Image (cartoon, rainbow, N blue to C red):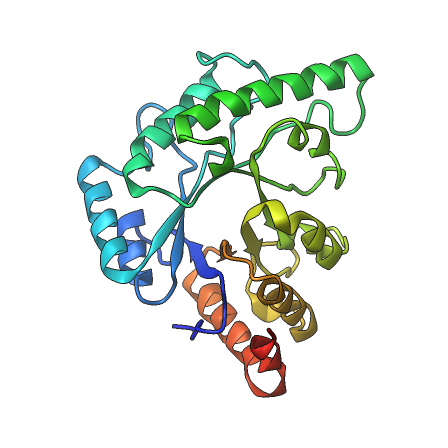
Length: 272
């Protein structure tokens, strides 16, 4: 486990670190991290990875016994802006996930706001309609979550950096800043983080090695230190998720964070 006494935020990772189900992963991670991102990508009828009531009970117990919180990643295939109607398949799928995990009192529900149909340009009318649909859909899903602030819209690769700004100006949802997505496309992740942080509930971080979601061992200590020091300097009290999906990447990422914290580089932890 990484010693995190100097961090104001909760350090976490995903529920797919060892090749096993969600509950087994949470048991493995308890005591090693302070938050687990439950990755619920498959929730269609038939085979899915939604936890049962008994598994939710056990997740609650593990969380209580280990000061462990949860974030929930809503399914990747949601198309919330397609139709701002509670009966739409994507909105209904989001509701199912929220209903299933509500008793865990998640810190955030992370979501991808799909805009592939308009991200590379559309008429002002089409774009405005997409934005209106997105806002209304977020309002509906936010009601399911209990408050719209619990929804954390994530920045995605392949989108203009300001793509979601018109939507975010209209509704008080939170943000998930994915540092790895920014690094992947060569953006200035530090400046983006600084500007987005006041509204950010979750930060995702991962290395790049041909693709994203790799070990932080692939990130320079300077870059990693820059992110950690900014989160500490601002007193960020959300969740920082090391968003990797294997035990090897998780352990080497922990080692990378530990290395940054040692020696002279740990001085940022002593800043007021």
